[in-house]
Length: 349
View 1: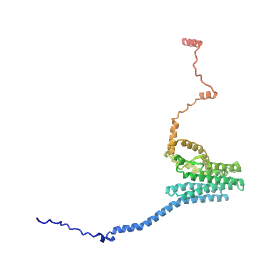
View 2: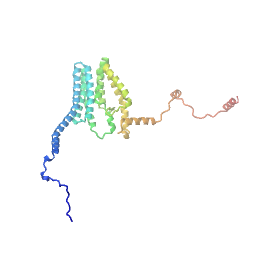
View 3: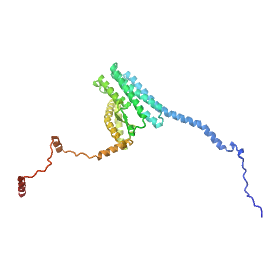
View 4: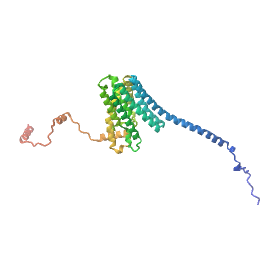
């Protein structure tokens, strides 16, 4: 037999593994060098971005403190309109910094502490000093009322910080504040100043009224009366047009009659407290709605109200009879003989 023929395909030359060098794969080496060099640069960019996210909310809080303390200075100089505007600006900055921190993912413990200290200054110390310097200067009892208000705001903020850390609280508690929040309390405490600017001096600027008002606001701040929170509020699309009209009216009043707008805002806020108290009691007594959205709870309340039977409406005649204590006869009267005869007579006629 002829010998088996070997394949004509040449056998490739294999390099031993010990002869391999990094230069055999230049592309891999270049990638490794680039990634190693870019790692510190990426880390630096991430650090700068994180520092920027932390800087913006804290800067807003510092600006709020500067606005509040400057309000005290301009009050001492007699520029009360500028002082009131600076307090409003501090309140707006206080409402913005927390939202900016949550949007940027920069919520930190130090930011929360700075915000709490800023609230104690802007909404506790500053309003008390403005009321004292403008309405009750050089009066010891006026200074005592200012101290009562300031201490109440500090106690209110301390309780607020402890309630934030309560992770076991029901979900509905996010929709309500315990007591009047510090920014709202500051605006309410400045009501005598607004009345003085709008209507001049009167009984509303007397020491007993001003002191009693500060004590009343201090009570609202430290009380456990529920007030509505706007953090979880949502605007339905059908109410957007009406809300924009309200904003336009508010802007017009702010530019022309700012103290009238202040009086309307304070009155509306105080009037909402009974409704917030009723809503809080309703949801607190129904554990099945604790974690529901506020709009769902409102829909459930409306459905329950429609399902209840309505009382019959009284006509004018029924109202008159009920007012006089008259009642319709309920028994049946037996016809008399004369009545029967008269009926027969009528029929025969």
